[in-house]
Length: 483
Length: 70
Image (cartoon, rainbow over all chains, first blue to last red; front, side):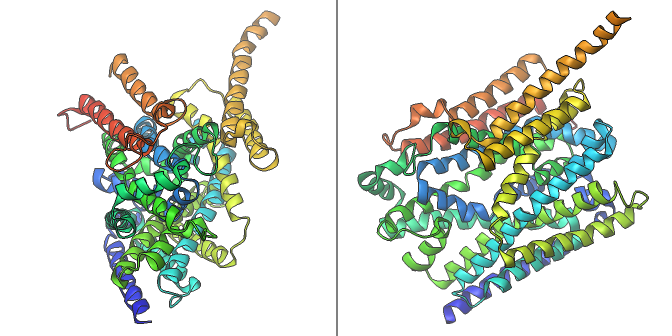
């Protein structure tokens, strides 16, 4: 029992520190909409690096990634690959988005699409899908925090209370400080995550096998199939490669990533962040070591839920002191909370800016919009918390579906950024066909060759856009001929 | 920036991407030789993350060099 109290105290101290830092970051900037949403478009390299890093490394990094390595083996490298390819997106798309945003006052994806294609409904639509995708994603972070708390404190802090604590801290600083709060806390939480991940990733193989090299030689002797493709579960190269491509390049359309491009102080800062980004992605390497450590440790009694492998190793196998368990919990909570803060902030902004301000409250002043955004952050977080308590099984499906649909808006967004010749009808028809194909192969029919359903959606999407563009190009000529 | 610059940056990104998926990763799909204790396939990914960093860093330096105002 006293062990659980030590673990809980360490974690509470950590939460208070995050809260203090987040509230302290409140600046005058936070009271205007541009300040609250995009840090006044003045966010520099260091903070930008930690914001973009922290929002992609979520609870999944600490739970899902080791879980993949434990269950599948080498196919887990897909996570390593796609996260290290994200900087390509930041480099190619980011500066253009930042530039257009500065010139034309955009703050969301919906702003860009609605303005470029001169269609308000398009902006509202993009906003709605965005919120539908962000809420389940946030729910997963909150639920992850609850699970971690409950497991690491041996039930002293139950699921509902752990989730509530993490969610209250996040909501409080996002409510008060907006993007500045997220920036400073992400800096602290990012450092925490990296330190804990490397510590555990080296300490666990060391205490179980006497080192990382020894661990891999042992796996090579006993279960070599885990160390090469297609891994222990037989993931094909097609599924592996398309999952990497869609996850890496589709990330350009994740609203929480896309909107941060607007906050950069210059395109140059975004390029510098993309240079440094792979250094953040190295964080996954030790977390994968932990998953590999579980392969032999749980060879006789396989875990029911692979994503508990890190917790089980730390709590039951390695027998660390409660101090280390407390730090582990803080590091894993940091991953969940730093992503959760970005998601709640983005969902609140998108809801107000793209949906409310474009429909029911067109006349709203800047101050009123900030106030409403703050409260919508609270409402969205509360909704996600309630869903986390109910734990509906359809949550993951909702997330997969909504994110798949957002990726189908990518040709449209790239058109607005780089290809002005694309017409509204073509991109809308493309997005409709792409979404249909995606939903078909994701939920109804097996995807051909086992490829990621999003690839088929995008291929159909681009094909339809090309056809429409050719038809549009021919039309004037045909009309002239008729005259 | 010149066309050559954009072509080279694009090429760098394409090579790094292809190295991490099919067909690039096929050539590294083995355990031996182990590097730093890791199976070769895992080291391959870590290597390309490093190469992506180095290449992008060069691209950044060429573009922005000592110029602080862009």
